[in-house]
Amino acid sequence: MRTPWRHRSLTWLAAAACLTLAAPSPTAVQAAPAPDSGTVAPAAVTFDENFDGPTGSGVNTSRWQLETGDNVNNHERQFYTSGTNNAALDGQGNLVITAKRENPANYNCWYGRCEYTSARLNTAGKFTAQYGRVEARMKLPRGQGIWPAFWMLGNDFGNVGWPASGEIDIMENVGFEPGTVHGTLHGPGYSGSGGIGAGYTLPGGAAFADAFHTFAIDWSPDSIRWSVDGNVYQTRTPADLGGRQWVFNKPFFIILNLAVGGYWPGDPDSSTRFPQQLVVDYVRVNTDTTPPPTGAKTIRGIGGKCLDVAGASSANGTAVQLYDCNGTAAQQWDVRSDGTVRALGKCLDAKDGATANGTLVQLWDCNGTAAQRWGISAARDIVSVPADKCLDATGNSSANGTRLQLWTCTGAANQKWTVA
Figure 1 (tube, rainbow, N blue to C red):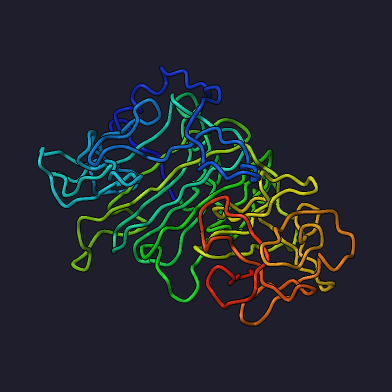
Figure 2: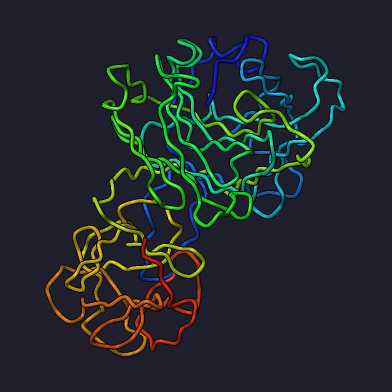
């Protein structure tokens, strides 16, 4: 939940009014791993930052800029630095933003000599998005007073200021809520603590610092939908604003940061351990805005990957595969009482009605045949009724693009599915 910045905080903002921040044309970027023969890739990607590079190297400056300064209006206590001291690649395909209890350069903050350093990055002037899916896979830090965020500001920020620019908080977490993240909209008349949003809490008392999770919005004209690991937890439209202005049908740029302290999280205390790290696997924007059908569910298999219709295509014979959970319609399944499992208006189908081990599974027109009848057991097996065989991830693999087949039920992890 953000409030406006003071003028001298964050040096890039001083020149914002002079910038012409135009949305670039889609460029050739590194895509998801190429699927194997017979598998169609998911929706086209317009921005795909995988943070590949040598250990200790900086971010790609053609896509990101590092902001510097403090932030009095939120009462944050860190100084955001440039360079690689607080934002660097780990050599394993991750960006690591590190908050440290230090002040090696004798930085001054709003409260005096700064106590902490950290980093904040944005894509202003380099990349903007208007609609589509915006997502990041991240492992969050932990501790009282720690405040990571993945968010967006309207590209007209330099001209109209905040909150008229609009702000979309895709993910915010405060340290005293280790298992909860928040998604919020800020605009004219609904900013700061008056922002409109909701929270999502992990089941079973889990903390977001324990593992990587995928945070996303699916954004279309007059609608923004938030999800965590493919689980949609809120949708906002102009109807939620009580007559106030919807300022989200325009380009926005992306921001990643790790704050220390502030009005919302409170300050660190004796329980807070430093350094703390926000680890970012990827940031991705694609053009798929197809909403999932009402009442549909995700089906998760080995490695936490989702049952996915390749390329989001509803053509007969389209491969059904495993892919990173992303909340799109290609991963939303309607499990019906007639034994069918449906997505995109078609049915999960055993190819050619075969029942042998190795029979591939595909999408096909619903036709009432036995090849489209499935049962889901209490043991989390999805079983082809005529074949009495299990839905199986080939090769015991959880790689993106892994095809699904029928195989004798073994109880192995590559045959276990969670429908939720």
